[in-house]
Length: 176
Image (cartoon, rainbow, N blue to C red; front, side, top):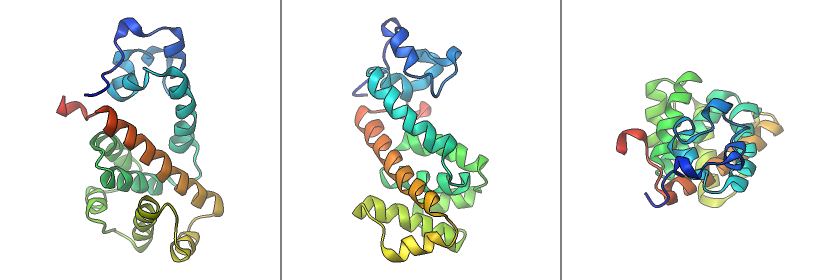
């Protein structure tokens, strides 16, 4: 791991406060925050700023949870981010994706035609940093303009998080 979790003795009030948007007070510590957040604790100002955006994407976005998790899993797969994949596979199941739906994300297939559009959208954004007119229009058949905007920012936000986790060496619990 390039950047290990911040040691408990280095956590101060400023560090703990950086997590207030995401974690209850009892979890604002190395053990409660978990391995990924404990790595981010090295930079409280950045963590606080990024978590505000991340909390929006995860909890307040206008995207239906199933679509959000489908897009996040595609990003995790395409960026080879094992931590993000493991973490969001559980969220995806809670959001209504079956084991087959989750597995299909990895090979680029989909349970429904619209799932295929979401996967294609994530791929286009990752490959070209834009959506084709065809994909934008296809997304609009089921998503509002705000939801399409949230989809673009979800793919971008989770791509950035995957870059950070992969670079810092954050791995799933079972790989430690």
